[in-house]
Length: 331
Image 1 (spheres, helix red, strand yellow):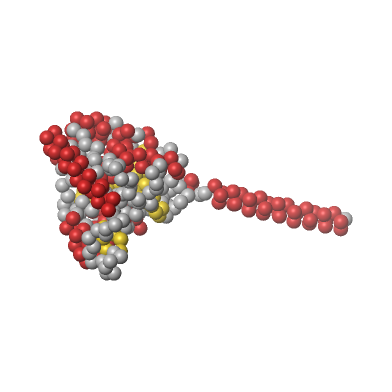
Image 2 (image 1 turned 90 degrees about the vertical axis):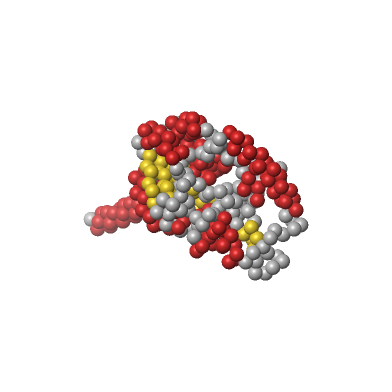
């Protein structure tokens, strides 16, 4: 990135363009740990920690986090790997970001999987004004704290305390036993207390600026997403996809023959807590829209095989020539 870099991990097949996996707000790529081993093996998964999350560096001081920045991250990754199209697996905040990306660049997206969010958020005007003002004020406090980060260590906790804090902080969406998947990349060992850790993600991310829309705006965004294989998974115990999402869902259904909506038993983090049920849906969807192709063979392998065949043919011809010469000599 122009300001630094993002950290990621590429799982599985590296011979074809992978699915780009993007996590939710305050999470990191650990959110996919339980699901990835269950997905089709013919296609790789490139997971990243978005700026300010996990092990990716923080943005410079004085810079606010905005949903548009994360849209730009997708474009820059595509540029880095020279992808003409992208396949996206997203959860929560990243599902909103991917909804925006899909409406802006429908021709550059060949598959979108969204976990438990299907549209951007909208609030009544008065609530939105208050939200923006509150975010600005709290962002400034966190920005000042960042300046003191090298001089003063943040509050630290035991692992058990951190697990409980995360469990409660996600409204009990992530089960206690699965909290470690996300915590592992969000904490740093304390230098003052040997058995304690502190949160190392960027506190300013808590007050990032969403791409807020209105119902008519969200409806227009949905109309621009056409002919894109689009699968939405809703957690049965979650209210992130509610009646406010109905209009967008109906538009997507009418405009897009490849749109699917599935409800699976679970919370907002249904993909982390109930990966088997989610994988059962996603494997069918991925195999239908990005099946194993001949392109899974690398060019290098093809060249090596061609060279081996040529060598074999040369050897056969040489043997025949030798035998022919021997026969002629006998005559």
